[in-house]
Length: 313
Image 1 (cartoon, rainbow, N blue to C red):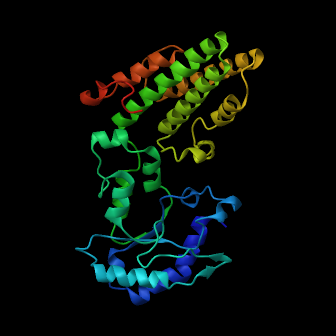
Image 2: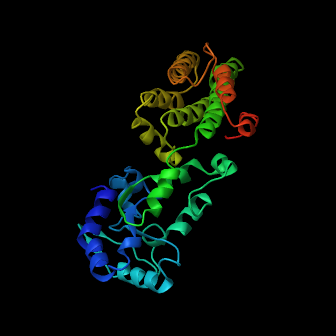
Image 3: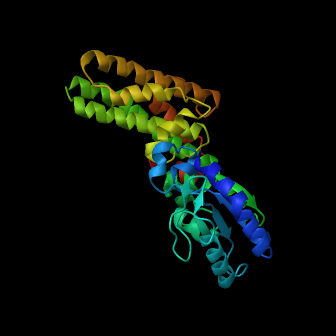
């Protein structure tokens, strides 16, 4: 059973009755669900995932103390801690008296401030450029079971995707990295006999290409160990995952290096086609560097457009 399914079943069996019977006066202000850190919040959990931080549990999000006071929060925390410790063959992790770090009773503003540095999900331009992408993914993954107060849902909607100009700045920077590492430096490293450096160029190319594909899908790239799994589930350009896996898991002898160079150019061509289809570039060529600057030139916010092209990387 997946973690989200386990969480929802546990909530319906024990959590919802507890809230409705004992905390009916708080129900209008509560949000319950499961999102944040952990593979189960992305739907990436499997048998291996059950060896740590895998349990029947859920998150109860509370608004500020002006709405739900400390005593009410404490009583709710204590009631959550007393819920059954075993469910469907899984044991709950031991919690402190004020709940656990990933599940239990959480203040909405504290959760989001810890993740992204903003209590209400409103980010400045600088924050959009610098907040770790995986943190944004953790703020918007998982599932809300109900949100009577609406605060959490509103914040998640505000964070659902990069603003258009921020997306373009990040896209432009990563396109430039793809050009430099894959279309230019990989072959030069091979010609110099630097196979290790060539493989570093491949890693740079693949990492930038993954970023580009997530941006073109309007999605946030999760923590790196889940990036390929998430990539394969995207709607657009997900088939590139197999080619990129080949690039980073093979050597750089002469014959393989030639195949890898053509694979790099193939990925570049597919990305350029998508850019053209989306009218994100005016360049007409196979050089990703020219497309990078074309994307950057289309940014409407002058302050952002005039920053170094790699400012969002």
